[in-house]
Image (cartoon, rainbow, N blue to C red; front, top):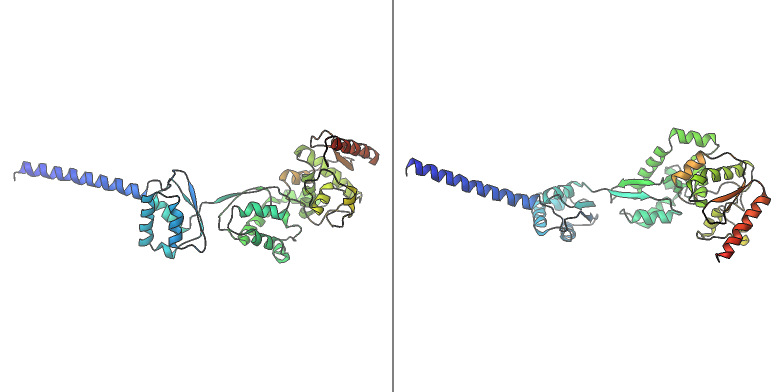
Length: 344
């Protein structure tokens, strides 16, 4: 073979090798790095503590492309994934099989965004939480109603609802109840800054008492602008050693949260939460108060009102009064408006 022919042959061989290498690169990219999600959208796979390699594959089948799942399985065999299965919530999306496998094997979870809402009861809170995290409603309720657990965080079963500050937080799906409460305790301490703590003390309240009064204020109105005025009215009653006579506490005691009227027969119901029957604040918050209500108690408006009644125009605001006679007129107007609307 002449030198020229050999050069042409070598050049042709290099071209073939280049094409083979390119095709190999494309194939490798396709299997290792192309989007693993079957839909092209981010999906989530939840791995429980009792999952094994076969159940993991079954869960992946629902969201993964066939070629990516095949690649995942080969990586799992080579790197003994069945010995390193970790519980959690894992994303399957635009990342390829290689990165997804790394996340699964290393326990690199996709965090869950959880919003703590201003809800009425610990049961309502449990409903929200347990839709997003691994532990059960029962496990959560057992913890927050345990005197020993509550004491660990500086609360009682009656006051611990005040430890949950409304906000949005990130958790891992397999967070345990203990881990959840630990984080909420840290967030609670962070919320109660030196400034807020000082304001509470200067007003003569502990943070638990602030949360309890704030929960009543929150129940009284959705109008945040009116909250400091309502807080001032209740603080005036406390300073005068008067019963709070807060209608929301009666609703809470009876579990009649949606009631529009408070009947006289209810006012004698024997419950420490009935502030018509017992003076002072109830044993704990009657809901998780919103931050605006907490701030309203800390920064309450100073005035001379000691009575209030919902306005007859159903605007969600209130008529305030300094005397019982004036308050009685306001109450009659509201009762008349309820009757005219057929509201029981």
